[in-house]
Picture (tube, rainbow, N blue to C red):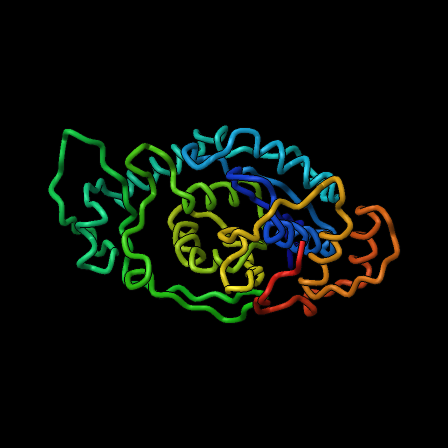
Length: 295
């Protein structure tokens, strides 16, 4: 007797380090299209677990901008800064299973090893005068998966990631742990995000296995690059999109994704609905374009 597949649940997970720029809009629209095509839920999660990098007010600005573009989540936004108990619980489970260890190694210590910590062996001795980082013991394991846009993928964790940090010296949670715990807790069935996070996927799949969490499907959208081939968010061209005039950037985002949009609608919600009518994942662009569309 076969069981019904779980309801599709996707998400867009911005970090509040500034205003929403065109590259992030592309990722938001792509994830929204995939969720709506599946008849599922689209969530927004604010990844605000790195206070030194956050800009006050940017989380509210991003949420307001998404709404101005007609990208309305099906649930109230989740904030990672309010989910510490979930991360503590996951960390405690890893500790109990002896999967993590304290580490006082600096970047300079690891430089002679290509910056990668391997085999659970620290170069620097324990230093009780300062707190350690906590790393995951990473085996010599090759993780394979199929990306729904980029195709078959494989990565050897020991060679490319090593014993990666789970909790930083300052006590802050790593992106890898928080992302995995949240995707599991929120029941995310497909992660649609930028290809700059493709190399995080093997680490996250490994963590899911250790924590007994399901592995979602993954789809990595090509990055929007500037004229010099740099990721747009790292470029001087990464100007914020204007929620007060959403139609031009929304049309450009859809076109960049490879979505055929001929709608004459004058409201973003209607443009998105019209785009969804003819949308197929097979039409999504698989490689980056240079330069990015002019904002």
